[in-house]
Length: 116
Image 1 (tube, one colour):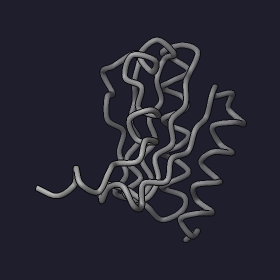
Image 2: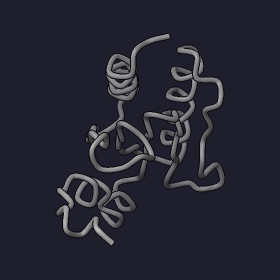
Image 3: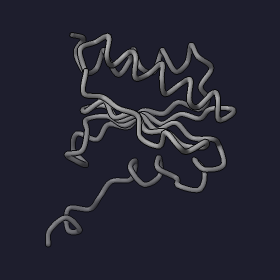
């Protein structure tokens, strides 16, 4: 099995090779326990988004992550591929701009806000 940083690089390369747009990787290690990395990319059409999500899922499975799955199968403008420690969001550009995940997860969370 490939190490997480290498798998992250492999997923980014897969998205790039398959013509995904505006690929962004966000390190979540100190921000959340949901995953170590979040990768966000855009597709050009619903078919392209579906194809990208299937390519990413295949790379996860080839590298020993058999419990991975695609969320949003019925959506034509968004898919999430859950690679356990690496979460991949693939949007159409309009939905991506609406949700602004990069902005939400890239900002530092003040420690005072974390204390409840």
